[in-house]
Length: 137
Image (cartoon, rainbow, N blue to C red; front, side, top):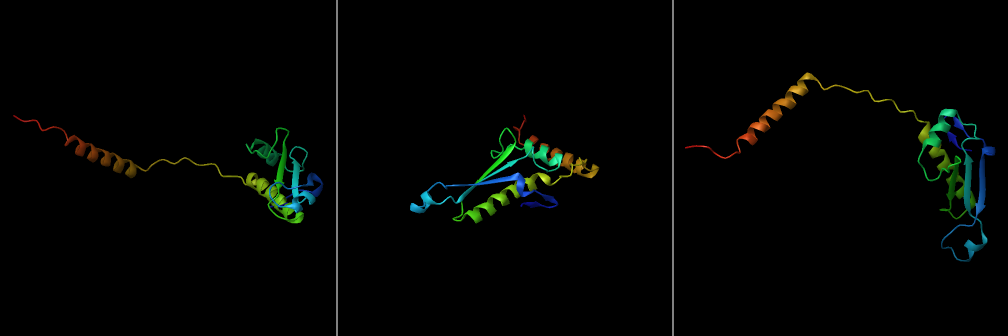
């Protein structure tokens, strides 16, 4: 089953169902169930709690209100390839939330950069001030 770095999802937690694919395909599409519906219940899974909360917090259309991930794979002609593609997409989704991003540390501009910025503004202001109408007698 999907391996996400050190995370492993047991096969018993993933429900795979073969269904008929949509779209063009002639007579074959009416006879063969080559598409795969993958269902994965986040709350009932053995994933760590912080991964579960991150998955449930995602605003992904593949995650239902009940916390079930539903992935439909029908891009390949064979059921095995569609099963592998669906599992890879589940793996990718879990991987996307398993990475902990470092918090950004706010930095201050250096004194030199502040002075250069102000000097540039003063120069630009002088240029614009020189564009005014000429006053004379």
